[in-house]
Image (cartoon, rainbow, N blue to C red; front, side, top):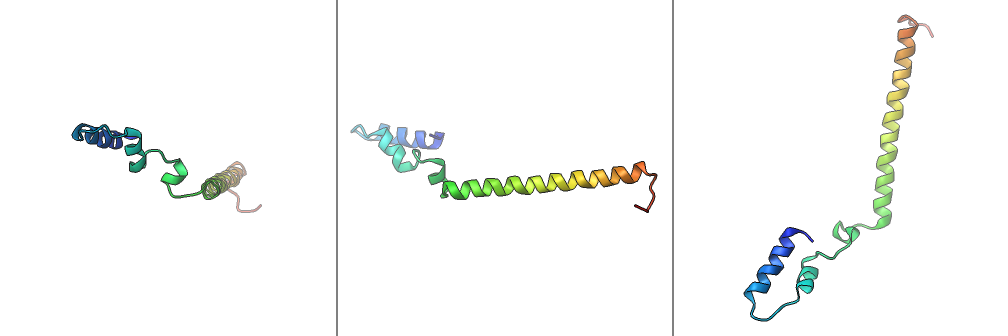
Length: 83
């Protein structure tokens, strides 16, 4: 639970003469949700986004490595324009 939920539920307990259920208070405040419920997503969407981002990062790293290879080869050959 986050601090705001704890403070809200503790303040409610202290103000009421009866003894409210702190767990029920936290559940109503949304503290007992899974990550998917909290972010309003599903496991399939989360994993597809994660794999898509990983693939994009892989493409960028690969492009940088291929570019560095060609620049290094050009420098080693003495800046010649021929292949």
